[in-house]
Image 1 (cartoon, rainbow, N blue to C red):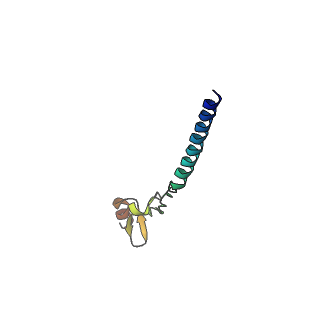
Image 2 (spheres, rainbow, N blue to C red; image 1 turned 90 degrees about the vertical axis):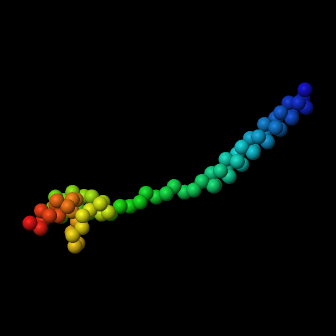
Image 3 (spheres, one colour; image 1 turned 30 degrees about the vertical axis):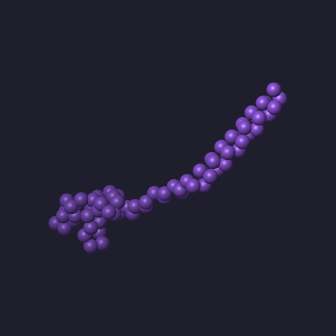
Amino acid sequence: MGQLLRLIIILIGLWLVLTIIKRALASLQKPAPDKPAVTKMVACAHCGMHIPESEAVRDGNRHYCSEEHRRKMHT
């Protein structure tokens, strides 16, 4: 009976060590989280609303939130 208990304890110990090693290796392989892209915001020259530069209507060095606001500034 003593030898069986000793064998069970050894097997549990081995399982525990292998589980810890496996988790440690898995955590090393995880890629670093991506940084969110930074989007430059610009203000509409007509109303002042801030919008992403990529979505703005551009006229020279001025930005507008819509084509309508760009036209209003030129009339």
